[in-house]
Length: 427
Image (cartoon, rainbow, N blue to C red; front, side, top):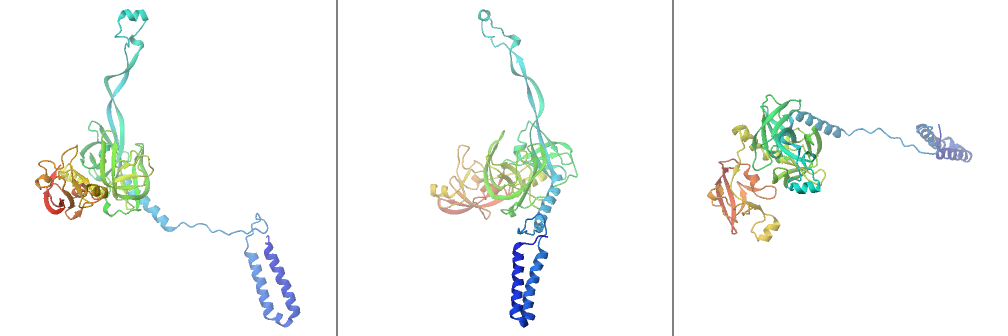
């Protein structure tokens, strides 16, 4: 065992002091002085005995004793909660495969000199015929996979929720692959005209079902879990993040369905990749709080999901009526912002300014809005006691009601507040 130099010099010094004390004060040394000094010597030897004895350490080098790292228990609890949520939800998550009959492009012979007079052909020795070819369509087709997405089962009888943009093509065929490897032909029952939602049906029974949570209770920073058919290839891919934004307004676009403005969506940094569209956004209980619908281009970990409360009425409508019945007021409007309020010198800083555009008039003729007496340039501020504001648009508030239901609207007209009633129609 190596003894550190500083301890050797300390012991030597104490021995010298002890000898001097005994020589000068023999009686006292027999008592307190001797006991105190002996106590110091004893403590020094205890340090020697407790010092590390690693022979690989050089003399005089201090060795710091380290304890094994113990995993913080709440971290284990969190990991177990994520695993439990995924195990609970995965059986009800499905992959959707899109197939379509596409033309077979072949190489057909043609004569590039067919329009040139024969005399010139002979003079310049131009030869056409089968030596030249070009792509052509002879009317033949073959079925090919052209896309894919994700969905989740909400009814044991085979109702599957997904995005409208996943199943937008009415000429395509759709196949649902369940988590247990089974394959089903799928029929699109309904596409929501207002939001990126569709409901498809497969002929099956006794299927596992996902529970729908309450998206109104979602908080910034809470855990968010996505499960989906990432890139249309990696089924049941799991990613974990947090809710990083609430009540966002985005403009989503894609091939075949153009651009679409979506209000009130959740933002998350849990990875949403192509193919994840239509899959569930889950909380730690394994409940659906959103439907993954879009990702921001040119950014990392910026994805968006429809709040599940926004689509519950549509789901119930399909279960009851076999279709999505959407409430309809019949107005075009601009959401009022601080900048718009200043620019237009408006009397309020929030609400829906009824104004038409290139796509049509402010108030649709014969609509519930016209029958209720709503006019262009009116500002609707409240729907059945709920204020219209950023993240709580007119459409979002109307979607909480049903066709045929009467709603009370507060309106500002030329600086004066008034109240009207409108019976919502069906879009």
